[in-house]
Length: 63
Image (tube, rainbow, N blue to C red; front, top):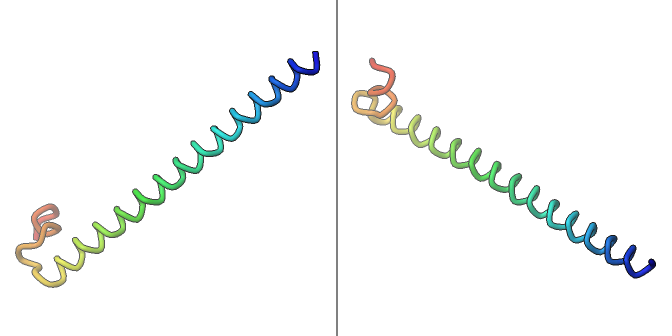
């Protein structure tokens, strides 16, 4: 009986560790996507400031 409980506990602990790692990977990916979006937005805005007549933002929104 004790061996079965220990095995169940070990399985539960392994599942918890796996879930925590998956959550961490998800949070890391979310931050990476947000940083990439910020970087792209910054580049588009900088392009618009430098070349307003041919910038991608002008082509998208008109002007």
